[in-house]
Length: 111
Length: 115
Image (cartoon, rainbow over all chains, first blue to last red; front, top):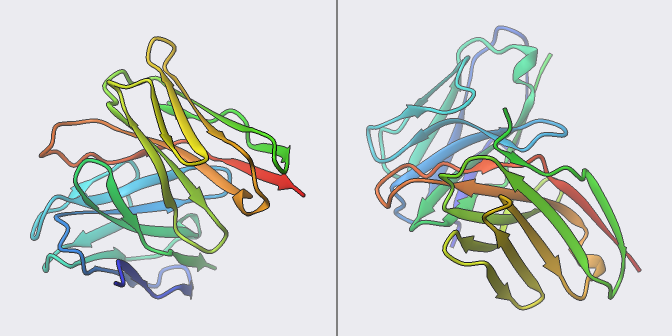
């Protein structure tokens, strides 16, 4: 009954470092999404996937890459972190038209 | 250009009274609208949704109203409780059943229910 699990929950990176955020869902959902949330703003879509092996760009994709090698996992990578990528990152998966489930978030600080 | 707007960053109401949160949208292709509640350090939690073919949907203390001609929706919480204090996000999606249906979010409204 885990739903959507995000790891890590917190991370501090130095400018230029790389890292990967992992999202895992155990609900067999086809659709998965990565959002970022910044102060005073709503969640903005970074990348999404409509199934295993597929990915597509969202509203704010620059500086990020994603992979969906297994249906249950959706990875978000930062190749060279920048302070502008300091944010809270949320992963979600979906079944049906409105059945979105969100993870609890990863708080990333880039110094 | 924000397609989904929540123009009130904050709202305070007394316990037991009605809370009304508003949301406007510009994209006429949106066909589903959702409200999420978010506590600090947690992910958004689904509250209620409405299809564009309806003008009202009710679930317990929560009712969402949709005015398509005005491109406006509102969430009513009656009666408001201190545990309702959170940030509320309005979101919208468009597309057919096989499409990605990514959500477009408003900027949120911080609701504070005063005891």
